[in-house]
Image (cartoon, rainbow, N blue to C red; front, side):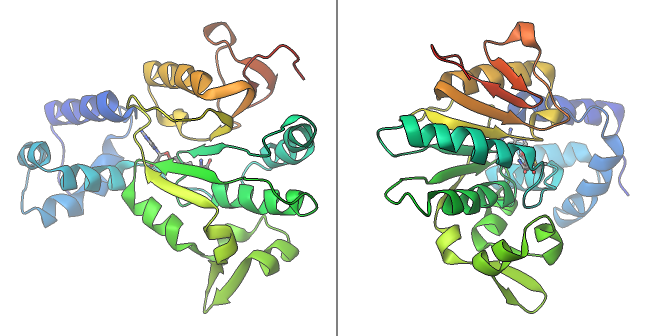
Length: 270
Ligand SMILES: C[S@@+](CC[C@H](N)C(=O)[O-])C[C@H]1O[C@@H](n2cnc3c(N)ncnc32)[C@H](O)[C@@H]1O
């Protein structure tokens, strides 16, 4: 194991917080453990030497993020959001949305289970209402998870919350793994995006998932991202965050609907 000096630790924590929002100030051991093999691969024995490499190499910065982000996820995680989508948001869209188009963003999508669960749910819902354009954007900072997401190959454990009928309908098996069918895979567009960047989209979203991402963010990064989400939603659009997260009510324009569900104001609210 290669140990960080206090100075190296502070430099790395500041760099990651400033550029990616993630607060690693209590993760010293995790950094040392996960970065050990990376330092060896780069033939260096101190973090200071590694920082010199990092400064000059975009590839190395990508490796660093692939190593230091926390990517745990699974299908139908925190199912209340999917019930709310099915029982509240989609029926309302059916009644009110004349364009028959829905824009959904899974921000911090990791290996894609959240976005793909949404696709399966919408396939079920819109089966009797053809003609809807319901593609989903899914973004993450880690290229490693995005590659896995695009492959759509999962361990059976990740599907444990899915019904047998969805497993049969939307997956095939190959050896020990479950392979997502193309009809689900092609509904999601995956992109690398740093949530700390100044990004723009051509059209606003109806729904943004940003679950279990801001939990690792500094307070400033979280507040600034919530303001960006607000601007990127349509009036009446929804934001889902993780169940263990919350938004300070006096620090936001979002309307609190129920734990971890927020709505951008509109004339006629729920
Ligand atoms: C624990 S996963 C959440 C996955 C899924 N949303 C869920 O709730 O199960 C958190 C993801 O946020 C991503 N992430 C962290 N900081 C980010 C940033 N600055 N920009 C984009 N994605 C980021 C990580 O790479 C990781 O894949």
